[in-house]
Image (tube, rainbow, N blue to C red; front, side, top):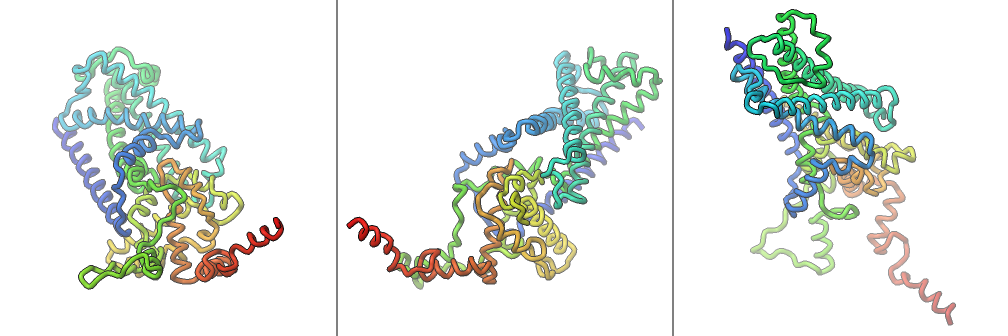
Length: 445
């Protein structure tokens, strides 16, 4: 019977690992529904971007208050999870605080640091709950956050609170058992935070203390494993995806819009800037579709962006179209893209029609009114804490609307025609382009 806890722990660990593997594989397959895209140029700049933006939280500090609280949670997530290694070893080997004799006094110092961080997480999470549910910060209470997105955000905060309380409960009861001389429990010489909570358990019997200590230990480790699985279904997937997302981010200047190679080639052929491929050369592949109508017309990087979205709303809060009352919300663009990708992937997994289900990203999820409202200013891209690019998705859908459906607004179509025939947005013949200069010369004479 003494090996039963180890067997149970192994089953829990194996089950969590299996669920996590399946979900990660599913997410990868879903992202690969997008078109290929090469983002391996300039690796030095990419590593620097990931270090500053993902690890360093650089763009979070445009709002100092929330950034500091987020930093506390982020550091705690990294540091406290070092203790999970000890949990794993203890769970598999049947030991208790296996590192305590090894590190001696430093172990107590480390535990105190962990507890201070745990308290910081508690305070930060409570503050974020107040912002979301009581003071109702506008960008955190928009229409697209109703229902599951709001519940998801609150669930994560409560889970983090419960996990931190479990750590403090475990340490408080653990030290009471150690002071009473119970076998395996090691006195640590004073833990500041959990020590102040010992009075809550001081009157309990050893059996009750042992129950609460073991309950808190199992709750914390199962909570950590369950949290890791749950995150892959949540907007908090950015905890993991922020790092590859910043590494694969677009390094081109923000105002540069990508051209379609096939169109560029045709224009160059018309202007004599490029020769047609010879009989011995392979002709470039024909483009399947101009722009994007559905998720398979976007790149896998676009889909990774969508799954990386934190739903923080900084992009929408900075969007001039949204600020002036337009329907466009860059956050909703990313959420809709993710939802459509999930829908298609689940249909394929279930053996259904997949992309041929009579729906599409443009039309059923995102309207032309939304994409036409975009000013292409890149404010959303600049505002995103992890370099997500909603504008690239919007531009691809506008490209499809203009080139495949001729569905752009009438004023836009007139401009397109002028550019095509007069090489300028205005309806003037190229030969008349410098008439204004002639008038100035006449006046000068």
